Image 1 (cartoon, rainbow, N blue to C red):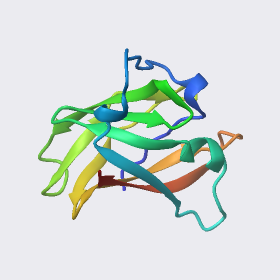
Image 2 (image 1 turned 90 degrees about the horizontal axis):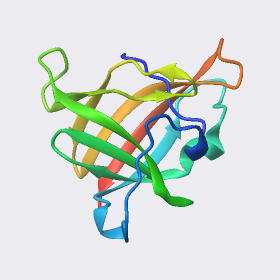
Image 3 (image 1 turned 120 degrees about the vertical axis):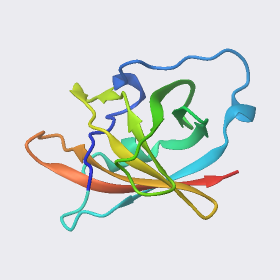
Image 4 (image 1 turned 60 degrees about the vertical axis):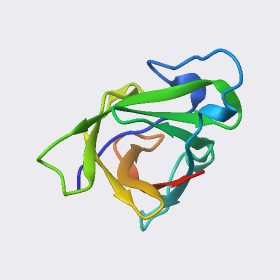
Length: 135
């Protein structure tokens, strides 16, 4: 499984995204987070704040319900190194760590990917499944 590090919160984003006006029409998917670590997941409240997304053919943007003006943008790149119906997500740097590429796969009704988010103590991490359903 490709591993990736995710966000501590909207205020900790590097390369944040700002937009003018009403973004409610810009969201294409709802986002849900499922902890898949046997020991539980650290940072759950902050991670789950990212509950909406805009998915384009070459970019993915995550947004927080608590702050419509900030978000995280990542490049979506086709690749022969991932399964069919999947692309690679590249380009996020969060919690002060550069993210590794992760497989971003089309599933019925949307997309999903799995990632590893560093815990408060960065020597350990939590595993998450992220599901995005079309609005």
